Image (cartoon, rainbow over all chains, first blue to last red; front, side, top):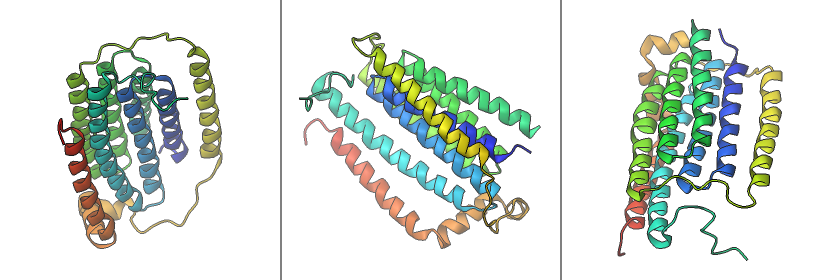
Length: 100
Length: 169
């Protein structure tokens, strides 16, 4: 029986890899993929606690997190398509219209 | 057996997500993320969340990542131009800070003993009826309001995505 702290440690590692990805990468779509990785790390923590505490609330919440992530992915990728159409690039370094 | 499967899945997940973050080609990154999602679904099965594991494969790996790959192919992105000016300090400090975050969160997660009032849905009770039936029953009784609001959210997201991608409004 694997203790719950091991599941949570894997969740923390995945989350921090996602954080590194958001800071390091310059491609907006890859940044978005790292955000999805962070969401999945949180999902893993939810399910680990749901099993540990004999509760189904964690699994229901993961269901809603997945739904919200799907909606967010659709809208975010629509934004990126519009951005590419208007700016010609998806590199976040070049989208600096508001920089002083 | 459960420990062996969990550590195997966890190792593949961590390596695959590292390769996703560090790879140059966005298509490679997307495929490594798909592998991460499959391993995560395997871990969900080990945690007695069969419905969530199936939804993870169908929705995340099967719909969201396919959408990502469509957009990557549509925009016809070439490989990232690496080594732009003045970014090394930013990258190093990002890695150091996220290591700090990992250490601080990890110390909390491993040192605590997580006690809490145990809920009513023990593994035997859930498996007697089936995981999907328990989730379905809860979604339509206790969690009905979030369920209905989520449908409105999905409608809004669909309308928004169509409007954002139109050429002429």
